[in-house]
Length: 336
Image (cartoon, rainbow, N blue to C red; front, side):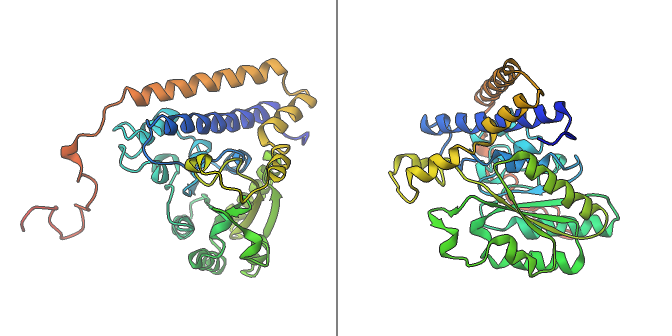
């Protein structure tokens, strides 16, 4: 552990990773109990990426997320109760229960939304970054996407634009080795960070299971962006401990070997960070256990908040579906 990292900040990183892990564990039980309709895409195992990146951001910076986006939202400051409420389709959720897992957003917190379309957050981040640059705002946009997005045309178009216009944007590729069940090595010859170099931007690969390594890469990228030096590409080598989505637990799919899974579990970002904090004298085992208890209580309060929140009124089903404030256009259903 770097001796320049303050102990309180190191403990904060642990708290945020533990919070994401416990949130996702609770989501699985709620899906299995049919309290959450459909399925969710778990972030378990990848916590160091979201926490390391967002730990380097200011409150005014923004992120665009993915279908596997719970971790990004929580790391950027998302409220556990409102997250659960959205997943349980309650009116107190971030999108009033209309968006569900893949569309959680809070513009006020700089969370410009998760996205079920692979790679679709990259041009949104570029748009925000373009606005920041034009308005001379000292702000940064981050776009998270998976290795499965690296062959999407829109991702390459976004990187090209960011490089040409020197936008303050950071592209974060969470390479968890598989696009659903397809290994990246079967569909791409060069590593994602190597491909990004062709656009003329600084590009690095880091250990995505090490929150400190991710954090330092993000600090360097944000400093570059704020100084007007343009975009950076960060490839975070990571791993999801469960399937592509919650339903896969019951499908007996075998595209990953048990040996592979166990080898990655030895790199668990939360357990290893706790060990490093203990070895550095930053905390005691009792401190770590106290954080785990605190997070567990927060998760349960969030679930109860969601359960006690009202269901949407069917009469309001069409609200928020159509724009009603376009210039020179009458409101929906109103004759001119």
